[in-house]
Amino acid sequence: MLLSLGLIIGLARLLGELAQRFRQPAVLGELLAGVILGPTVFGTFAPEWQTFLFPRDTHNATVHQGIGTLAIVLFLLVAGLEINLSVVWKQGRSALKVGMLGILIPFTTGFAGAWLTPLLFGREPDADPMIFSLFFATAMAISALPVIAKTLMDLNLYRTDLGMVVVSAAIFDDLIGWTIFSLILGMIGAHGGASNVGMTVALTLLYAGLMLTVGRWLVHRILPLLQAYTHGQGGVLGFTVVLGLFGAAFTEHIGIHAIFGSFIVGVTLGASRHMHERTRTLLEEFVSFIFAPVFFGSIGLRVNFLEHFDGPLVLIVLIVACLGKLLGAVIGARWGGLPIRDRWAIGFAMNARGAMEIILGLLALEAGIITQRLFVALVVMAIVTSAISGPMMRWILQRRQAQRIVSHLSAARFRREMTAGTRRDAIAELVAMAVAQVDLNAEAIEAAAWSREQLLATGIGHGVAIPHARIEGLKEPIVAVGLSDGGIEFDAPDGQPAHIVFLLLTPLKDPAVQLELSANISQIFREPRALERVQRSQSYTEFLAALKMLEPRPQA
Image 1 (spheres, rainbow, N blue to C red):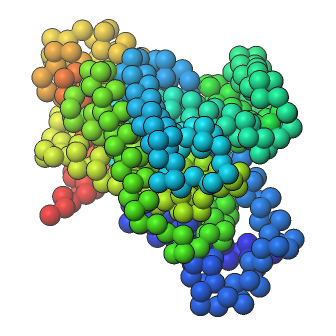
Image 2 (image 1 turned 180 degrees about the vertical axis):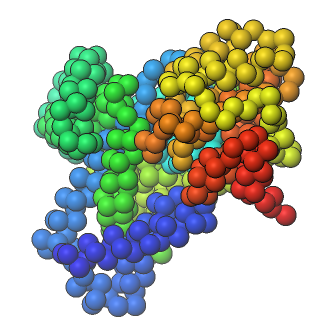
């Protein structure tokens, strides 16, 4: 047992890191590890050793299954933590329109295809036609919020206006999609506990409603107590995991899969402003580096991917998935009034399926809804859509020459030592410096930048923060920058205060400028000692020289 777990985690982490080096999701490498250790590769060349290490009908198999169940429960808990419902409402109509059509159109096309041609899409002969069609529709409609968030972070877009629309729409899609799928599992009684479907649905809605209202109120008051009277992050982490397991146990008991219970707990906790970014990051790393490799690596142990690979089915599933999601997101973005370049970038971002699709397919396979060949097709589709998401977004958004932060700096808008001690004061100080020589309303700009900061903190880590606002009537970007030796709290993912604060004011009609400047700043400060080098600057000239030395060389 220990040897097999060590092999899975070790190889999955190794290949996951290798995948990320090539700008691919880590789940791609983790899945490949399972394929290598499973019947597809290892079982073909050394079947006796493969059976010895990974037997299917012993206590070891039970252990792997138990850890796998725990892994997806914790994985969905982390996915829920990434969801902030207030972000959806604050982002406005654009995100809601993208989310609505981003799930409605692929759901409709997926349902129609599975209902009209079930055998073409790999329905089990004994599977209920309605349940199979609902499952396939859900599989075509759901997005993978963790993969989307990671892609946006890799492209330095996560905390931008475009990133917020994508994240908000993905939140909406995940809530609807996972609710539908959990009800499907309840309908077939695969994870029983409640015999009456109506009662199961009623209890599910009651659980979700109470958790998102009364539960949210209680959590909002408990978290400060834990932070004040427990050691470090341990109290909040322990409370989060325990509550997630209790939620999973409850929904499993009423006939809905455990993942829905932990997911709703994650949403409840993520809605509180007392759930710090550092705590989310710690839990995400713990789950992603230990439990996720076991789960995704174990998938390859269950299925022979070569034996069950069906080329035509894979192609059909891929086409239906991409067309439905791209059309839905792009039309929704157009309805929301977004520029054409942003529409397609949002479409490819929402098209990433990743881990969520694989979890969905595995649960359906275990429940007897789909065949192994459809499961393999869904895995391939999840990998392909995740792999093309980032490169396509990069190509769409960077057709013109990227903006450089050093091109917009000036000595008049640089301050070596800021006097501000809070985020609000820092924004006010930089706004005053930014508009000192131009005819702009300082109060209105400060309000816009602070409103954006309240929506989602702009600390990017590495000691840097990038508060920003898009200003109507502005023709050229205005950048003000200040240094703070003491540091200013900007709720960064790494928990570190900001020692360098860039204020970006960009034209309302040109959203790409803000994206490019933010990306350029993030690239500069990826260098581990970049902050230290810049902080040594005692003048604007030294500051500008340090940035130019650190700026990445443009690729040929």
